[in-house]
Length: 278
Image (cartoon, rainbow, N blue to C red; front, side, top):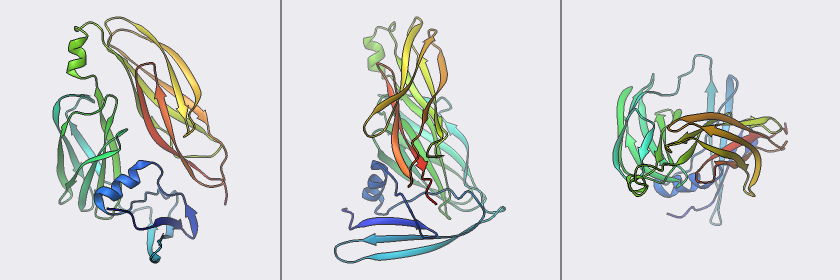
């Protein structure tokens, strides 16, 4: 399916940057619809407008969104299986999420990050349900991210699993040499332009002896290393650290990639900086 125009989103008449990166295009290609996410910081009533401009004509829609103190909460993920966060890159695994909500549940969108592909979409029923998907392995350091969505399109995003080394790679290593893998645990995105972006990272050492690695934070579409930390990690253990970047003041909202990397591993996310123009 080819997109038939360009989509523009507005909140209370103010233009809002559309989702950056390949995810929005992937979602449209798989589902046939655009998506736009926004977090409202204060209570009140908001007008959300969308305009689609195309060579064969334009179209527009409007929603009135009311944000209240006692408004509905997003869905909750009560449990995930397997309980371990680490998946083997060349194994078939069934993933499950136990989900509850105060409103009717709708669906779960399963993503494979870094590859930016939709693995599956699971339908949900009622206010308590279990969603599952069978996966046939994945790319090293890629994560599984699940969007849990209710009938109001309120959603919760979770990423409880990450792919580690394959069994074949471990076999080739003779069970002695392991690897060092980095995984972005989370960020404080979105931030306002000019504020400090924090990227919390786990570095895992599966070698049979301690290793020392320099971990770098790389930002932007024109990649620039903005922070580095050197850590020594004992055999079989993990180290958590936070890398930082003072974002640039921007007039309009902006999204850009951030990547954490060592010499043999990397992990990437897209983050957002709010514009300062009022």
